[in-house]
Amino acid sequence: MHYHLTIEFSLIISIIIKKMFKHKLQILLLVISTYSCGYGQYLTHNGKKTSNTSEAISSFGQIGSAEPIAVNSNNLNNGLTSGNASTSAYAIKQAYPSSTDGFYWIANANINSGMPFRIYADMTTDGGGWTLIMKNSNRVGWTYANAISLNTTIPFSNTSDVISTATANYSIIGWADYIKRSESGFEYMIDATNRGEYGGIWTANGNYSFVKGDASQTNVTVTTKFGPKNNGNDWEYVNDNGISQRMPWYQNTTSLGIISTDNGPSRWWGTLITQSTSWSPAPWISNAGGGSSNPNPGIIWYWVR
Image (cartoon, rainbow, N blue to C red; front, side):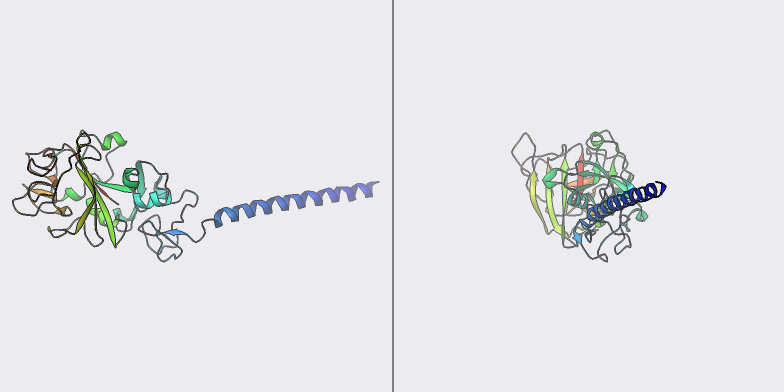
């Protein structure tokens, strides 16, 4: 009797072990299946996918890192935490198309000592993927130095702060060259007074710079114009009286535009940042500027994609 019980007990133990092994094997296969779905797909610095790890970028902006960002792999590169930083709003939108307007973390080896930092992203306009690089609502306090680097830790808590004329100025223009999506071309966007008004979306050559020290970057194309929402009239290019067909450039001046589309000496219209005390916050489109004028827009935003 004791012998038979021992045999039955052994059989029961054997069945239990087999079932446990089968269950663990199923779990293992599930894990392998889950991770293999995106296996070999990594993110490049401009938001594209690659299977070549030497082209891939890490969450700290290092190209060819031993820890590349895997595309859509367990919340990596979604930008929602500093540990999951991506490279730009555009890269986040490409990897996570359902991303909405708000704050995200990005990183690049050439920016902020390689450490992740927060940005505000427009994930809606023209398909989204826009990184805010400047918000100007007060002419007071701007200098040549801080026009490209001011409050880089981002002084906003919510979207209402971003569109408010009462909150602090902000600029990461000096970092924008590392955020633009491609070396072959990129886009920038400007709007004034209200989001989606008095500005537009432009495409530019990939070698153009956000901190160019002269007015030579004129090969830009406006693909979308923003006029006033309650008026169908758009602005027109008019040299010296409004937005010029020129990417905003960076000039050391105390009276004219520090960041401006103007064409140089003694000119100031089409300006995003100025130290002049005569404007709110900068001279934008004059009454002679063609189309809808807006000399004192109150607030101006500048974006890169």
